[in-house]
Image 1: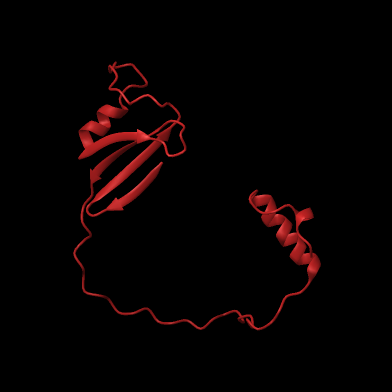
Image 2: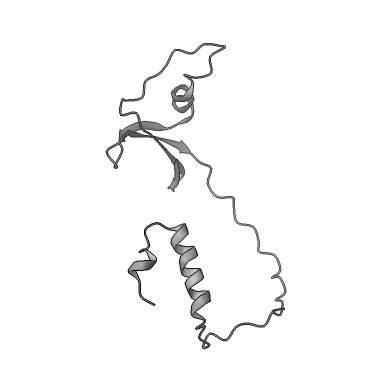
Length: 123
């Protein structure tokens, strides 16, 4: 799902893996499905679908009118500035503990599979 702001409306996009066009379903009082497009049709300014850019499925979108920003109020007094309670690190210092740096790099690799494997990088 992706929500974006355009002018004075919200654009809501939802992806699914079914390539068939969305169709209005018959609604049953005790049914647990079939209401989605009816709700979209009732609330939106415009709605449609397009094939997914990945080539799998489709993206169904709708445009919903959004209220404008509230009228600007007179600004209140500025908050007082606080003094830092922690000493700031000197940006000129270099951290060169290779064991710690390797653990950090390995942790980052574990979180992001797009990083090269550790055996492909020389320290």
